[in-house]
Image (cartoon, rainbow, N blue to C red; front, side):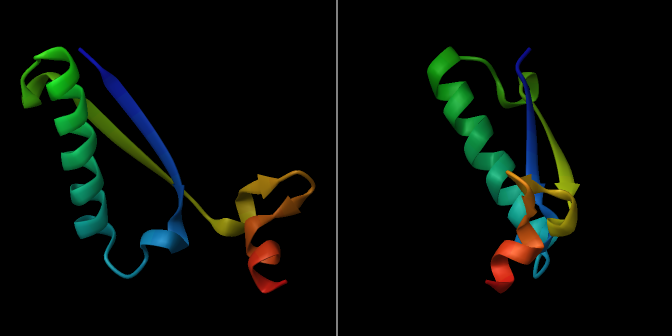
Length: 68
């Protein structure tokens, strides 16, 4: 049973979190189903939302990088 953990910056999906997560999950599930032959119910997708101020690229957080 594939388990997919997707971490993303919370602010990226802020305008429609439920809709965007559903769209991402559907496409990820479809890709795994097509590659493996498993059913949709065999694919688990979990989202972890991280604030931009808590996600760092090197020594700088994403919130700061977006302001530059």
